Length: 627
Ligand code: GYE
Image (cartoon, rainbow, N blue to C red; front, side):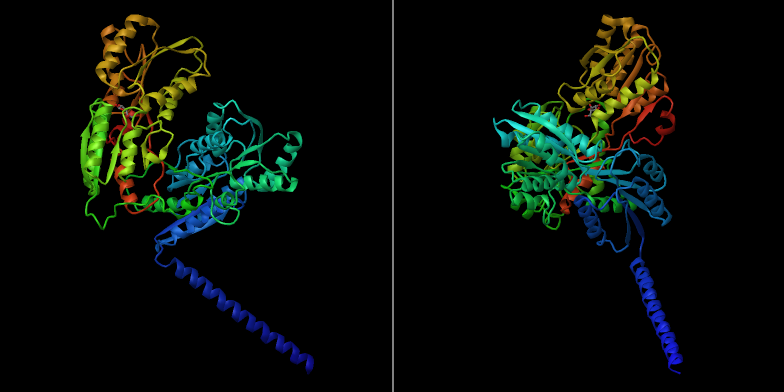
């Protein structure tokens, strides 16, 4: 009897457990269904790993921002450092039917193909680390070269004239932030003969690896007194190694500036780090832009580079308190925002398209626009900016004719509490706190695209190829960087020679007259013209025809801008390539102004989307052109 009773009791217990499990299972399913109730968008977040504190902070930012949208559901995956697993994660997210992918990768190459494939189906936001090429909707990440340069400058400031034996501690070898931070860092320290980089340690962003490696190096070189680590986590590893060895007096500089115990800000406060460079992870911005993309908003750029803030003992507490980009204007106080805009001039058809884009976007966004033309004179621009300051406009935007000479007037605007936005062209000023953000093209990449096309077209040609160059306005950022990018790729090919290079000031007339001189001087030797904009190229085409040669056939013509007139020259077979430089910056300018008035974090650089147009693909794209 007893045994039988025992069996019955177990039987009923099992039934009871099953009922309880079933009930919780139903609740969980119903709850997840409830949490999906009203879901309009599903975003997939593919994270490379969650062992790097920076990525944990990034996911937390994504979570807190996405919680603000009731119609949004987010699914997270963690690849745990495995490239293959991240590929599987991406496919799993696609199988869930996500509407948009946010992905943060470890390196730049391995996932580029699968991201390009996904981008053909749904929008893709690449977050934190760049990938090769441009097959994605939007990249959001820190201005890594700025981080490197600022870190180099901080070492120089801390060292003064003292002798420095420095070790650089890098993250994952060949990852974009490592390459860019290292490049910026070396650009600065190579100008300081007292600073010697005696070693480089690759610690894969890993704190413990940094700790182990630096102990080995210290045995070889006891004179090390400075460390620049590409992340605060690795910097902490160095500190722990030195503490174990009882070594004092090291100057350690990190990057990331995260909150929390052992975060960069805490390490600076505790004087473990002499400095770090804080920037937002981009998690919050990725959700904001994802919703803009999913809702079909205009003015979405191609790249967003996040502002970098140098943090030392002097400003660490003030940094934490200050709300980034605090406004002295708010929408409820003013029904319309007043924007003072100072244009370069009327030198090119690109400029005309740029001006009309800004005027139309101001109307579309309901922003009151005060528009001034400087007729290619920097003094006129400075005068116009001063007038806007006197008139107390809410915000100033302008396209600097040249890269230098505006520091004083920008300081006056900052003193007056009027934020300034750079559009189109850039400044070479190191102090990037003098402007809110810079919206425009990657001019150096435009130069590379021109060279890449030429190398492709002349692949296998062994004989000398002589190029004449028509430069833009001397000292203007497009001139400087289109030249730099073009030369960067040709440098490795000894049979390409730039036999002449002169400014045509971005105008058709000057382009024509300079080309006339080139033809008189070099005649038959010229095989290629590289013009920094279409207007000068069109002037050169006229000069070549007058000389009796066939532009586009006897002499290859390569230019930049991709204006309507350039397309007509492509169709006529007189131009061979025009690299797009998008002048339609109006929507992005007005959108960033609206974001700013809403207190959103504003990136330091916003890069526009661009392509290239040859005689082969021009017809297909011409009809959709806005300029
Ligand atoms: O290429 C040229 C204009 O600043 C990118 O200026 C712009 C350049 C453009 O005159 O046509």
